[in-house]
Image: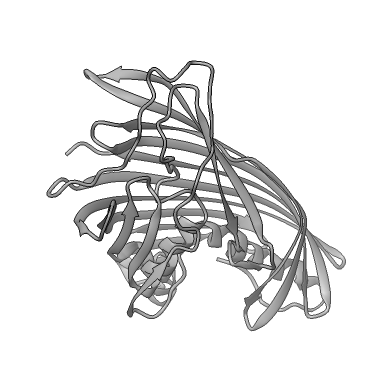
Length: 362
């Protein structure tokens, strides 16, 4: 879904549009392909220790929250992620603008396989029903792509270039499927009762994707509880360090993100008490440096500023020990300089995103 790869003269900005979409946009949400072999990998963030900020409501309703995985009671979640990207790239003698929208939908089944010591559960993860939609407007015109299971349909300026149902563009379709390979694989995770992911096991694409996802947020579902009881009005913070931004490898110390979670008043739904939480994770980062390798070329990336606001809500059934749903929204803006083959282009990027997670009834 891009244009020519030449980096000389007026085509530099167009080349960096392709790099920007692949590196920044696709890399933020899509897994990478790797050889299929079984491995296991520890999540570098590991269990976290939190300090609790006590609210004014008192501790009369304080309780300890834990995730529970029960035998023969799998949890099935429906997940939708959206990403929008608006890029303005200024290269030598050329200015290029591009817009991209992406939506991915899938289901994730979590089944207890056993206990691996203490409060750690080994959980089998089985994604299914994977669908994706892309819409890109840039130097190559207007490109759309739909992935529905094994079917891929792609158009460029209204002309169908890929349609696996009709045997059109089968080679391009194969590459499109590779982009979502990890979400067609199953594997296992070790998760403690607070929501921390300890270890991921499975084929390489599965392990690399889910390890990266868990290292870029709190736990598997974006919520990790402290050891101590939490009362209404209490809040706690957790942090993690991003070593990659999309497919850009960041130089030390990376990008530190802090997440603040606060307990809100409970509600009653269908006779059950449901706990509610708010989530906030804003940051203002300056002078990040990194690089990425694309098309046989090393691209140096300097990020003078990257500002992000992120907020959301989550609902938890404490009796069941399960997250019922969560909704998060992210808005950000980054200014970058990307250098390749001795030339430099400036990039101004506006990012929007959201993720919805919902526990489906059995």
